Length: 234
Image (cartoon, rainbow, N blue to C red):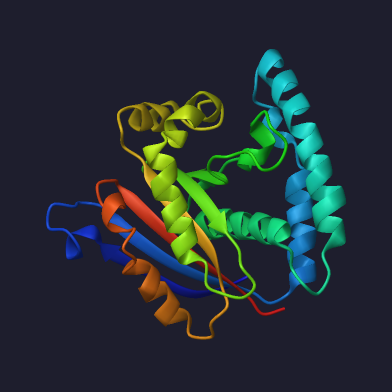
């Protein structure tokens, strides 16, 4: 993974009443095989269960087992030269969490598929992190091998907010974030991450297009927006 682009923009540049920040990050994945190995390690690492009480640990372990098996056996083991949409979205989610941790000091939470009841395809946000300001970032990942996917990611976030998917996830997320973060989220202080694949060679143009997306306007009321573009050059 290589950092190609990182900028910070005041939301007030788009709306004088907005007080938050928009962070744009572009990451290049140049060694897909290595990335798969790293994702496998994350999928098999169940240390996130260790801090839970016995009941929560048993419940989440049972909940996550089938999804972990699916990710490792059906998705990661079957990656070839052409990336499937399933693998692509797991990869974009994982890269986004890693980028936020490495470059903006976020805490990464277990992927949403591991802590939800339904195996794979569960409607809701794909990944979550907690920022240094104790704000939960609700993340949506989209992958396409033929076109840039920022519009789909941002549109999905907008729809999920309208459907209160973020609020529905708080009972599970409270087991993995600080009390300050869960209280801020309950009071409406949240942030959102749109992670997406990039097919164009002009990364700056694509990140600028995401920044100027028509879907950004509805997110300016929140504390932060993270735009994370993932370019696969393997």
